[in-house]
Length: 251
Image (cartoon, rainbow, N blue to C red; front, side, top):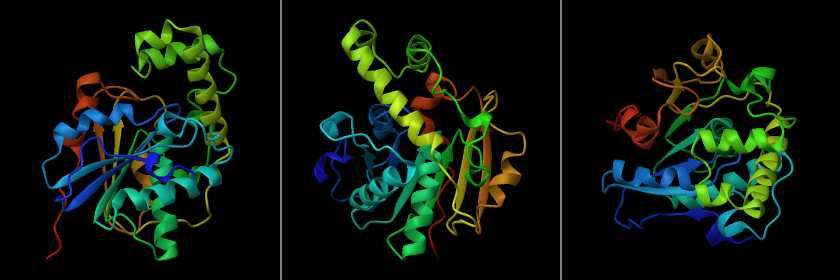
């Protein structure tokens, strides 16, 4: 594995005192998070985890199971944090991955995040239900490409190139297979403060999302509904860190 390619730091901030570590969503990479750098002050470094099979890890095989990807992600998160206090963030499938990684690190007595922020995902202890299967493995290639276009995941030059479009669909399908293989660890919970963000119009999210996440969190839980759907609105997504709850410094 190319260890240096598993973590992308858009700008190195060696004097930063903490790190925001982000995990990708289904079919995504590090690109959707890179503009968040401008939303962070100089005390926070942005570190983006790159899953195998894409970007700088293109030569590696994609993970084929949830556990395989979670083990890889946990190792990458520790490298991304680099010993600093850190917030772990994940969107959609990445939200479940962030929860799973945080729970694994806590259980192992490793360097766990001091705050977990998950976005656009239901409580993980439910497992994968029909509501969570968005997009679906049985969706036609054209539908997957249209979905990726709608959410801004693919630039025009990719959509206009058949070979690049085929690669994008292949990666999306690989991630869907991993997502659909997820099985919750019975009784898994986390102790750090958790913030759950979701779009008011997101059809994926259960009405009882706050109650359900409460089963997974032993400490403080905050749930915030924001305008828009699964990816909110484009302006809101670009400035999503503005909606992260203020971190309380330990007394």
